[in-house]
Image 1 (cartoon, rainbow, N blue to C red):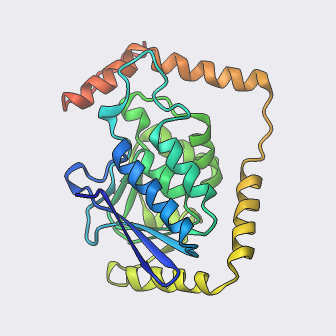
Image 2: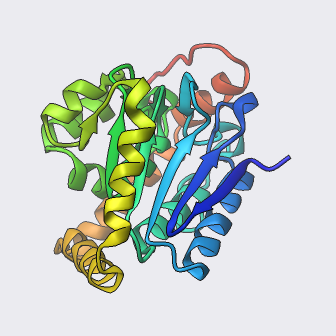
Length: 259
């Protein structure tokens, strides 16, 4: 059974997460299917993509498949990590990607959604960035996705507390474009997608790439880059990181010591 389904209506495509048994976690297999779906959309010259879960879901995506992360001594979120590849594909896709959100969004799925060009969610939707809950160090590009989407204090709150934030609050701060009643979600989202699809695709593609480049135009000295990488290694070499992964696999709360 596929983990992601793809459908096309004229120049609007829909990629649907369809792995309810694992709460649509971003496993390597699911991410590979998502990327393949985006490649098919690119080949078909799709003008707008809607990224969604199955209708009525309670969890849009549970984020990283923690069971796939290494237990220690190795960077858990390196360049080849599935989430990193997915975010790069969404950002580089030549047409807008709209995240249509029902249910809760956890961990790395928050970054996936924030990497999309527009976000439409229901009032019941919540977003929780959870690396601190598992003792996982986040990578630089992932943090930049948060900072580009949210004010620093909101990004700090999400990353430090790991607590869910309602979609209504994120809409007020401009992080989410629209919050729409569940009964109207599909109609509103696809009306927006069709509006985009009627506009000049080359103009939109060029502007999206320009915005992507500008969003990443943050200067950093080699010293600071090395410092950031060193800070991440402090975490993934720690006992707390190994404890967080073990606790997840053993379905218990972790006991962090700060070591």
